Length: 352
Image (cartoon, rainbow, N blue to C red; front, top):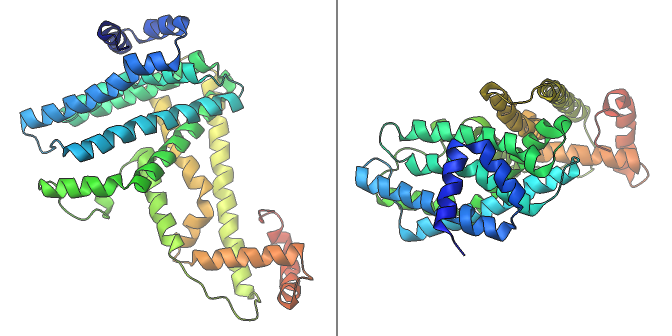
């Protein structure tokens, strides 16, 4: 059952006395249902209601959406939160921490308080976006600090856990929004009230930081998936195709190795610090975006150079077949000779 006084106490404490509030709530060890009823759900609902009411009262450029869109956004917020908790909690268990969903809900709900308050005030004219940005960053800092307390994450794994979990959460959120068609509903609603202006696909509409990287990689992925390639009837590779594959994969491996070295250095740097500064958190936040770029390196290299991703995938499959089953057919036998010619370069690069 919802207890308004408890809700007010947690929100006030989460804003003004964060760490004592975390410690006290940690000691209570509440089940996730209690946290959801007395903090998570009312916090998200209140933030969205206040944001809409402030938008209507102040007459700013941001307006309250239709009820249908608002309800869809609310449901999406709940689902996104549940997914985020699941990801952060699961990853904690894989990195030497505790896979405790009750504590995961508590930790992420408490850390989300500044961000949700910022979201509620974000529709204020002139200063709203500044307040929202500042409180969102504060929530990010709080999340980094509270997770080891609630999920027992080892100091040596804090950075890796945070970066990987944040990345997976961002990707899951984008996929979920796209699957449910929230962007289309919101765009239609905005058009109806006359706010939308310009082309959605322009660079100016793209976010920064981690979200910007997710959007950029999503655009590259869409472009790559639209590629088509008609392989030669004889199934034989050309020397130029093998050379291009080596070029792409060499650059891709270099990007991934560089990112791994940066994250290892950042982990070592953070291990020696009891608290993370704003600068530290921004490094970690940028690192999450870098993880997505490094993971998707080969596709980015192909597409940014104007290449055909479908052809790249076909070449890789023929090289795989030539290496593993050169007697499969005549094409594989001939391609194996080409593979052997470039084996010194190919062997370290092939994903098998």
